[in-house]
Image (tube, rainbow, N blue to C red):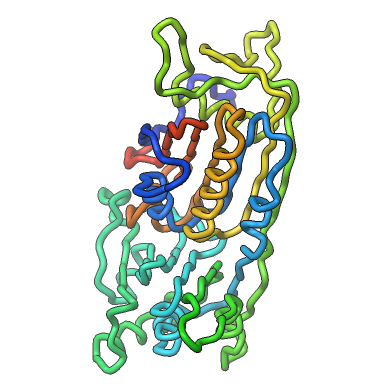
Length: 371
């Protein structure tokens, strides 16, 4: 068999959304970046890049100190529509769930969004046997091989026949059992009510009467490193006419190479990395990675800590944050169905400089079938 000329293969196409503007670092009101962060529910990895920073602030390191989540194994989906669960965790606080290590293109997947919507991404056989109302996946319209079912858990009435029908269908053997990653943010303390521990949701599932459900703690993985002797690109929206700056794609690509500790030293080779535009020499760059399951509130806290650091450290050229979603999550941004034909990528990057100028760079797969 002859080896294919892989260098002739075109890269998978993506939809890229870029937004630029200026924000107030002090007030942080009407910040469009926060709206973008809140639209991306399931976050697997957060990376921050601090060029020319002497150290990573302790407050920033502590932001995700209590961000561990849980893995619930052998979960029957009728447990997600139980009255006690909806009243205790869906309607109180914010609940996140996404199926663990399932393939979106070939397997049944599930998610629960923070607004209380149960999303089922099902194979054709499962959907037709289950008997719940849904629609064909927008990425499988020609073959009708995948279907999407959405159930608003907050509007279900346990005394209705509709509720009993849904619960009976979700408990059917055809669906099987799922391994699901979960996270829960308790409601804020009010009046005489005490503080509720986020681990209460783990105890709820661990107390399963059948004994089939197993709950595991999934600690957040943290990694830090730093790079030395760098000439980072300059990010500016108010560029003088006599100077040239790198474009958004080049800046995001540079951030990615920095986060991966790639060799950025210029050499006389064809495959060496280089970019056009103004540069500024910095002593080092601090890089920090978190991997786990992060809520939108946690990502927003990291972003706000970055803005606070940037306001104090005016000498840094810019700060960057990269957030990557789960490739096999049923949804990506908002309630948009996730693309699965090639890579299922759904991520975004944020760059802010001391003047409050920002870049929002959003990347998702499109609905074009691979050739």
